Image (cartoon, rainbow, N blue to C red; front, side, top):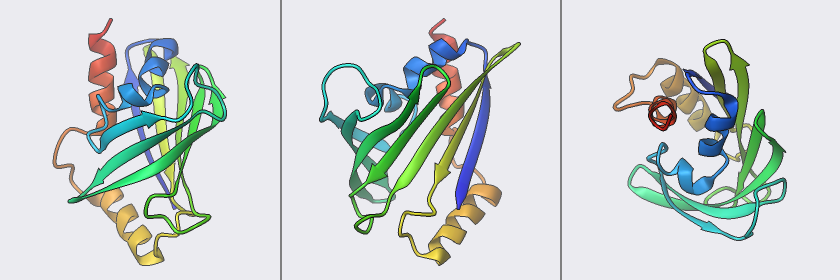
Length: 151
């Protein structure tokens, strides 16, 4: 199961990249991220790892996040493991940036097929993602606002 969202941002891909490749900056636009602690120090690249604590409803869950694809400023893939996921399971967060005449088209894809999440809950997540009404500002809209305000 794959969840997708896109946003057009009036800034070049290089500028948008700085907001998505830094886990600390991700906290500024993704309200579910509560805490980030680095495991690797230095520049981010394939193999960079950190721990990210997400708030999921009333519970928090700490995942190991590892960059498995890093093509600046085009594509970033973060694999989430551990936390409450069954052993050997994972979730991939994929960010694809494409230059456009108006700036950058950012596509976020979340792959939950290998998450070990029960098929019923995966279908429920997909249904809510597709047909549910947002209760607040969408994450990518918040990202757009932050990137464009930083120009």
